[in-house]
Amino acid sequence: MWASVAAGVVDGMVAAWLPTTHGHFYEEYKDRIVDLGPNLTGTQIGLVVPDITVGRQTAASGQRNASYIKAESIGDLKKYADKFHRRIIGIDPEAGIMEKTREALREYGLYNYELVKGSEVSMTAELSNAIRKQKWIVVTGWEPHWMFARWKLKFLDDPKNVYGGEEKIHTIVREGLKEDMPDVYKFLDAFKWNTEELEQLMIWIKDDDGMFPGEKALRYMRFHEDQVNAWLK
Image (tube, one colour):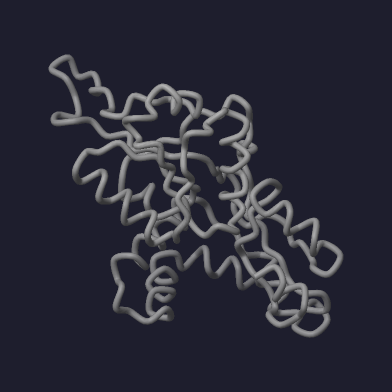
């Protein structure tokens, strides 16, 4: 995406995670793109585990029962290495979150862990299977993502701040777009939404697997007519 926008092959993208996750891409391409700023705030990346109880969700007292996974921070992965089978389930090897996870393995001394390469699809499939069977699992995760809308999950605390805390998703366009397509430029500059709205769309996309992309977009537009009209002013 970054290379295509910088080369002018495509007009823009709305999925630039800054300043941490895509920071190395931004440094490489910043002189050849235009940053229109955040379209979504309050994002996060890190290591994620299920936050689900075994059996009843609440005790007789009304208090929520504890999760079957006891780890609370990345440092706890050392203590529970056998439970997690010394594996962190990752995604595409060149993804920004994978680079940060390799750094986390060094910073937290998790030398006996394997960072399993794969894809977003394979990662969520393993997560789904582990939750169904109540097995211990830790995955590379980011929010917004449909998995947070589907399951109760939690980020492991990151006291060394390897993953950089809260991020923003920016809109990036090619140089010259404002002059070539002023209406498109204005629309992309006005495009804003929040985590809940994006995750709702993601769940619809996941559940409506047979629909065409345009139908999924229209479903969102019908539910959020005022918001879409605000983008078009």
